[in-house]
Image 1 (spheres, one colour):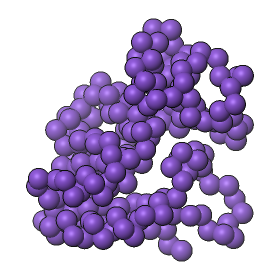
Image 2 (cartoon, helix red, strand yellow):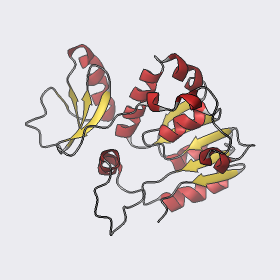
Image 3 (tube, rainbow, N blue to C red):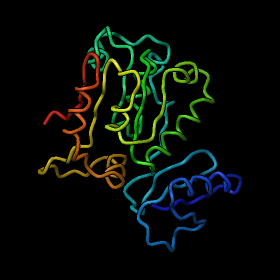
Image 4 (cartoon, one colour):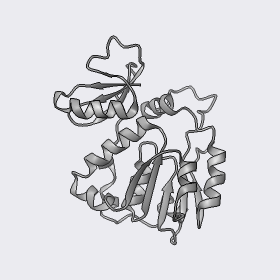
Length: 221
């Protein structure tokens, strides 16, 4: 991955991000051999590749349903039912683009969102920073969603206060007989992080740490 900036006024910010990620910073990526790059635009940070099959991927918490932001989500919503009524604190051990972590925070849970890929974590922090400029999102997320860069197993073992619940939504391999291409977001995420081959190990750590329950999301197949 390299970092590409299209915004002259954000060069200093882009340079700091490139140093933190230890990746090259370029202003013209057309001649580069890299297939993946982070683009710093006037408005956001976006993961892109050279494929013409879709747009880039960025974190956008403004897409959260307005009823959720207003605190009117039904307790029968599957994600809430999975955690139960007694859970207050959650560690999202495989945060990815953070949509579930943000949803849970908007629902009233206190969520620690852990992401071990520095590239994906950069997208998360950019999305969170932009969300703080939205009054509704700031009210729901500021004190309920905490972003942590690092390996979830190590983070879980090092917590001073164990969470009520741990949430795991690992990147599983696609179905072998599936002919259609995966969504662009999943395709780019998989290109960066691969499959979560250590998901079973993470499950063991989560079960040892969580005070009440571990919730795992898996595809129907």
